[in-house]
Amino acid sequence: MLPPELSALFGVADPAARDVAWRRFVETHSRLVLYAARSIDRNHDAAMDAYAYVLEQLQRDDFRRLRAYAADDRGRFSTWLVLVARRLCLDQVRQRYGRRQSEDEQSHEAHETRRRLLDHVAEEVDVATIANEGDRDAEMRFRVEELGDALAQALAALAPADRLLIKLRFQDGLSVPEIARILKAPTPFHIYRRLNAVLAQVRAALARRGVEDPEP
Amino acid sequence: MSAEQTEREHPSAGVLAAFVDGTLPLAERAAIESHLADCDVCRADVISAVRFARPRVTVRRWYLPAAAAAAVLLALAIGRERAPMVTREPVTREPVITTTEAPVALAPRGVVSRPVRLVWTQVAFADSYRVTLFDDAGRAIYETQTRDTSTFVPDSIHLEPREGYFWKMEAQTGWNRWVASELIEFSVDPAGR
Image (cartoon, rainbow over all chains, first blue to last red; front, side, top):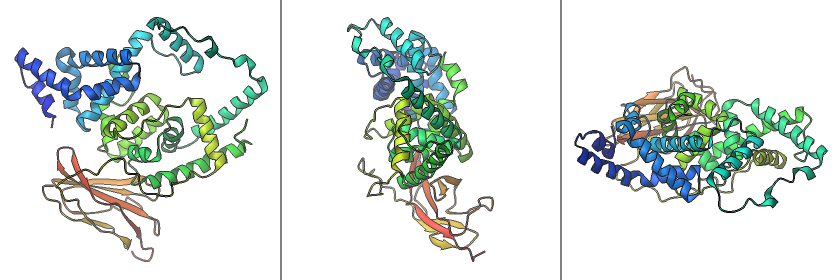
């Protein structure tokens, strides 16, 4: 069953009535689209650009994207729309700034640099923020990398569901109740128990590789 | 890359929305969890959608991968991930006011014999009931939907004697409207058949 603002949009042929239905749709979902745009870029101007882009894309080709929801409405419309709006915002970023070739820090920095240049940011790039990596002790860097590799291998060896748990908690910084909601665990307590079990697994895997201490 | 290409490489928005809203069948959920474990983009999408549904949840900052690695190592060094003193979920919003009476899970409770029959009270205007069974670690191990007010756990779901299991049921009272029972714990009697 379609939400009423969507049924109204699809059900009218008269252009004037359709404009009214579209305005109603925008009024109803503006907050959601803005939320999605801000989740990609917190900069006000960039978020407003993305907001306009999302609305334009939703309206395009006789609401082709919105009609896709009618064909697959297993989730709530608002949930679906957040996901579609975020993907459209990411599309816009890629169109404008190019796609990241890899997730390593170097290409990320290059991407960010290109982005800063394209945006003609008013403020000067702070010289102090330019990396001071040269100062770091080479041996320490090697040990940090070694430790990182050991951890990456231990995580890769986990079952996907356990790896997801670790990533949600430590990479994405989610609270345990939030993780419980995403994984549909009956209570947060269950997530604590699972986390303890998975951490023990990772700890054992690291110990087997001779890593006992988090200090590099 | 276009939105169409994005949707070919990753689960569709419809599938992810169903995952977030808990309407995806159990088998498909496992496949999506597997994808999310290695896809930062879809994980960020899911987190965003969940947080939009719960706007009062504190928005946390995103950590760099290096910081994430440090956090994992720190947790490993400190030891066990401790549950807070109060194990009940913190109240982040007022409970939803509804005139619909919540269903009551009648059986099983405590220690029960096989076969395990799940029974609950009828809810006015409910046209469907969704039952979910969790293992001790909180993983959903069985889910089914029925119009009846009872169902059996099939033999294909192996329930270990003495292990704790939890179950709850939700009654569908309207389009995308569900009202849930409390979570009930039970275990299977090793002596019982």
